[in-house]
Image (tube, rainbow, N blue to C red; front, side, top):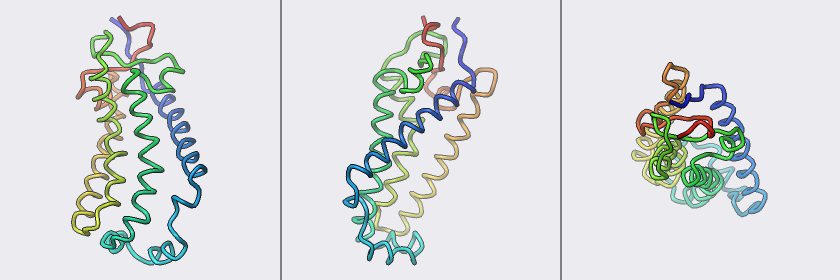
Length: 183
């Protein structure tokens, strides 16, 4: 049976992927420039409000919501799509890692895509909060985003255990291996 990769190489891949995604976010801002940024007047208006006040303002959603989603969710979605379709994130590929089934065999794209979606769920749901102009729903979605994000983040620490599987691996019955060791 193939040996599962421990926490160290997985953390290295996460950090490298983080740099790649942040470079993509910066590239989006550089490309679109001020088109993504709200007017100075709107920034001044919303600087004095708490999140629950500006969530009720439809103008906030129009001026801030879409740019936020474009800048943060789009690069994350592209990253997830790459990992989901190829079986490895760019950093995993660089480090010679791949996702396989819990028993060390190659897995299906469907399972990899599901794993990637679960692993990155918070990054897709959190920005949607800023498109909801209803304060009560804003609060609920914001709390769900925080709780799910923390659960998934803490779930990564499970890879420190003997089984070397994060929460998203356990749910999807997958693990990370050296690519050359997968059967």
